[in-house]
Length: 413
Ligand SMILES: NC(=O)c1ccc[n+]([C@@H]2O[C@H](COP(=O)([O-])OP(=O)(O)OC[C@H]3O[C@@H](n4cnc5c(N)ncnc54)[C@H](O)[C@@H]3O)[C@@H](O)[C@H]2O)c1
Image (cartoon, rainbow, N blue to C red; front, side):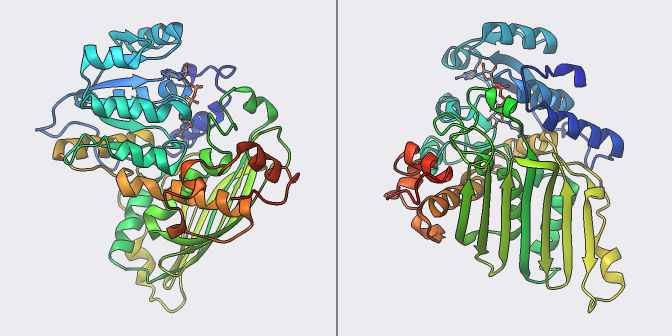
């Protein structure tokens, strides 16, 4: 699988390579077989954007679904990329225009793998053509764009959902079911740290770290995975106080952000998103009344990445009764895709869609508002008349860049 990637074209390839090694080293057992249930139809799938993530993650995940999916079309503005990818994966439909593809192919599912600035229009076009849509992170550039997409969904579908693969896999799913049953008591304290490393060359890809094309820095494009996983476990946030800085990279957006987040549950969480950290790690820790649960991984996790420490007051059978889960399925695009196809079969809104897909983007907007204005932000303040609802930089992108690089004290709203 590693031969699928072209390092020079795709600097983010480390994410994918490392996931592959992690998965290969751990020889995971799949929680559920990737074969179709008896009543599952074959879904006609179109993939828009033939770059690193499409080739490295989505097309292999689609192939793993067997008869549940058939990739009928690929789209990219770059005709050569379409041809190359379609030849490699034996895909018949080849397009450089999304609307032409939708009219000709009528796909059941459109997977959006373009850079973030193209997400909104591509997702809306897919929904308007009657297809369900699964779009890469960050979902879109603002809360306003997210809500605009919602207006194009049908009451019973088609729905748009977003790629947040780290909330899937057996470890996260098992912990979520324990929390649903209130088995661990109240969440009290949390840590949600995404400490990654990206050198200057990474930012040579023109759409990266620019307000108009990526929408933000590591808060928007990298730590959003960990933040989404945390909210999928612990629920909504209520208040955030953040600082951000452009410390070492020549970017419009921040290269590091930190926040203190209060959750609706009453728990307090420390959030750090960095692209400047040579020993990379993704670290989450949740202290519940009856146990500490930790997850340390990099770009994907299996059961071995989780650590469980019961509180002293719990009896000795507590640990064994709750951990590890019986299955060992890594977090992955394939794990989320399988659940999406199940939701399509049931005709139900999938996970990471609608309100459930919006939480991490809400925190990102709150973090930018707090860091750029110097004030604590409540989630309820991010209403339609707030500039940070419409853009992560608030009223003025140049002013936001000046604040992050410490040339101005705060942006004026
Ligand atoms: N989930 C993850 O772990 C993960 C990891 C890496 C990237 N991503 C996300 O995936 C998306 C794509 O990232 P990438 O690294 O593959 O980018 P990339 O630059 O390698 O590929 C993007 C492709 O989209 C094409 N494209 C651009 N605009 C288009 C349009 N309007 N219509 C059709 N094609 C268009 C480009 O020509 C290019 O081939 C981004 O949103 C990124 O944040 C997610």
